[in-house]
Length: 341
Image (cartoon, rainbow, N blue to C red):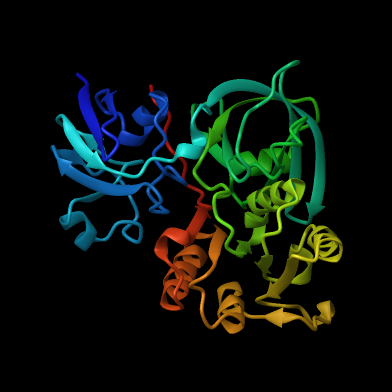
């Protein structure tokens, strides 16, 4: 049994099958609700249920508080309608015409970028290209039906291969397979693109990028997209990692800063080793931003990394005047959405 959902204020109608989430059905219907992680961790898909009964699903309490839930808010990546429903949610116009597709991809090249980061370059079938926006992600569909999500590190203009940066997760079956067993020419099955972490090109505000670890990957795509467009927007990238070896593509943002006068790069180490002989910034990456900006009211922030880093950045940046709707995030979690049957 399916239920009809109406989106306000657009008035768009779509059907949601039994046991399907609001978001999954909207994607299938070609409607562009905002979202990030698709597993109840980031809160990007949060919206209001104006009428109808809802199963709120499994989610993290940091992404949806009890107070928000009591006020009628829900995470549409987890919530399922139990009756016909009306929801309030802003739709994302920039994604019009871009729908996720399932397709095979060949591992064209593997490049170990550091002791625990591997770059994969994937080749789609002949004459195929994936249309995507810089900053979006794809999901690998594994043999057991589980999925693993990774951000695209390349910009859309450079789409001969799909570039991904994978960090080795101890005990993680997929990343251990990639590091220890996978060979070039392996065939993988993927679906994409997904996500509403992309450049808002209608703004001229200066941009602050905040990356934690491999959160550098989608931000790399965003920066390369902006530089390719030759826009004059001011940009500063704060990249936070533990020690020097974790800055796995250090020469690239350094080169951006050398070549482009509107781009600045600030690496931040939280636990530098004595052998690093580090003379740069230390501590938490969000604090480095706060140390440099007394007022964030005139900026946009694109933040990507672990949930605690993203949550802390949002809270502290808002306290410095950043409008909530100028903070865009991609939260890296190890949990993954269960595919539809």
